Length: 110
Image 1 (cartoon, rainbow, N blue to C red):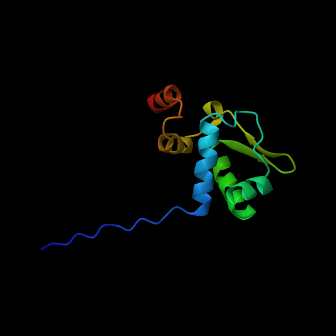
Image 2 (image 1 turned 180 degrees about the vertical axis):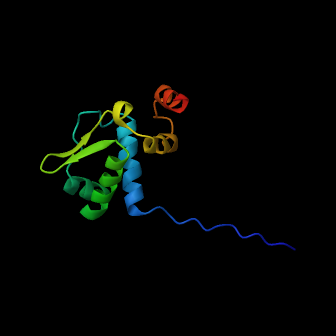
C-alpha cells in the first residue's frame, strides 16, 4: 500500500493576516486612492497586534503598489489601477468578489 504524504501548510503569519485585511479594505474601496490609512498605532490597537507587525504589512502593501509610505505623513493609498505593478496581480486574484474584474481582465490581456 502506497502512502502519499501531503505537504503541511504553514498557517498565515500575523503580518499576512493584517496584510489581507488592509489589502481587502483598499481593493474594496473602503480606503480610496488619495486617502491616508489610520496611523500604525491605531491599526495595531484595532487588530490587537504590535506596531512592528503593522509596519511589515504596510511595507508589503507599498512593495506591490497599493500605498506610499511617507515619514511624518503616513501611509497614503495610491491609485493602484495606474501605479500597481505585476506583483499586484497576485493580490487581486487572491482577493475575492470586491476586485474590479474589468481592471483585472485588462491587466491580464496586457
